[in-house]
Image (cartoon, rainbow, N blue to C red):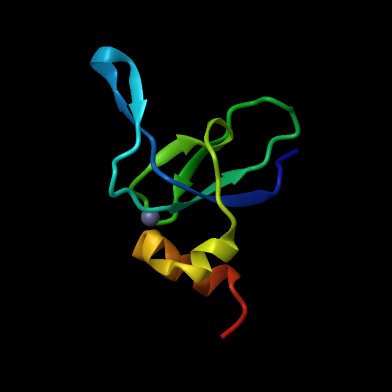
Length: 92
Ligand SMILES: [Zn+2]
């Protein structure tokens, strides 16, 4: 059975393949990643950002609350923020 769709705000984590290191750009923005919830615990959840620019395993990295994005929209990807607001945010 398929799980419910979830989403979370995260910074895109990039990889330097040559030295096998993960990093986040200093000017990175938060993107809204969507994924299908799994009923098996510990499974990696590959999620795609709403803007379509990034993919990552959301259970490997830290998320922030939507409230923080609403308070400081400048820290979020503009495309993700606009789409997220249209789909999920009911308010002024
Ligand atoms: Zn985005």
